[in-house]
Length: 247
Image 1 (spheres, rainbow, N blue to C red):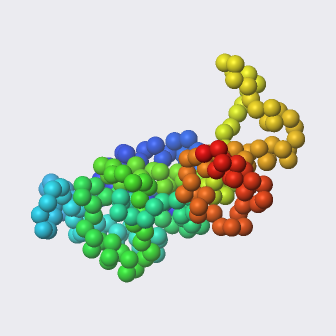
Image 2: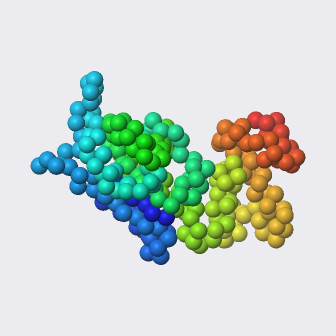
Image 3: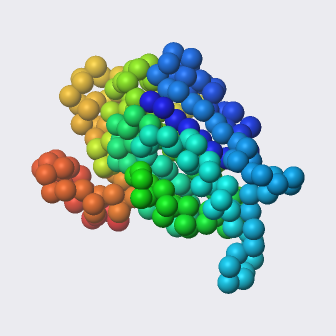
């Protein structure tokens, strides 16, 4: 997968070259290029922003600079991703969708954001997504880009040591993942659940499913409400009925 990131703080993206992502880059599974937006400025101050039309606080990133940057970087038809609090929610489903792409370009906004005409112009020649990683506001798009890239990259073949890890993640089946345990069997008088030491794989699988249902019920009932009817079997419904009675 080819990844390009345009930002006024290239050094901010350095963590992407660490840990699993760094290894994936070294192995050629991911190609990552970070571009300095100021390379497309033409004034002595290398300014990338100006005051907003209509007044108001803050500054808006200039369309001239962003337009030239995207013209240079997007020589083909990548998918452009623009992190913004006003975007649609970034989800595991969208991460899987991005993982199927060959080329993603990320535009890191700052201040009050990027002049909207940049998005409109880009959308005329490539797919463009305005995406939010949560209902809060950051000082810039760099952190959001790192979140999105990490979520996408770990779904690529060969990035994770054990591909099954991604299949059992939270949201992979519409539920939150249940609790995990490792050695020792007893730690500070807290034992590992007996079923996990039983060797009964069917019982373990059922226990993990029940734990996922319970955790999702208490923490993210919205996810349960969004599940299709066929996603829950008879045992699942019995577990949820019990939880409703106890609530």
